[in-house]
Image (cartoon, rainbow, N blue to C red):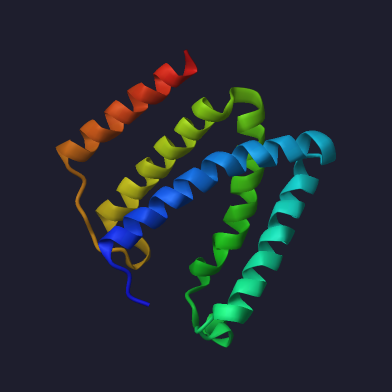
Amino acid sequence: MPVNTVTAIFMAVIAGVAIGFQGTLNSLLSKTVGLWESTFIVHLTGWAAVTAIMLLFGQGNLSAVFQAPRASLLGGLLGVMVVAAVILAFRRLGAMYALGLVIFSQLLVAAVVDHFGWFGIERTPFSLARALGLLLLGAGVYFFKR
């Protein structure tokens, strides 16, 4: 399904808003049921939602999963780590500081992935402008702590 730039930007904003709420809601749930139990519930409800969406709208080939690169199958394991780590971080650091650290870390890793062209991503060399952007974002996260 081809996606134009405006749609991609809109979806990125939607993802950002969802992540902002998700961490807070997952942290709230963990106070009642526990860290690993809330991580389980988050993934179980996510599985139920994506199963329904896939059955209604899916046009891919699920059986082709065995032809996918092995590294691409680590996303689910990383998802468990992400949910659990965000729950702990939000609970201890607050939403803004924790999410600032998450975003900074994501962009730092993305810069490395782009620079080396890992996992089939088109290679985009690290530049002074990107370094400055990361530095400014890091400074902003520092002030979120205050």
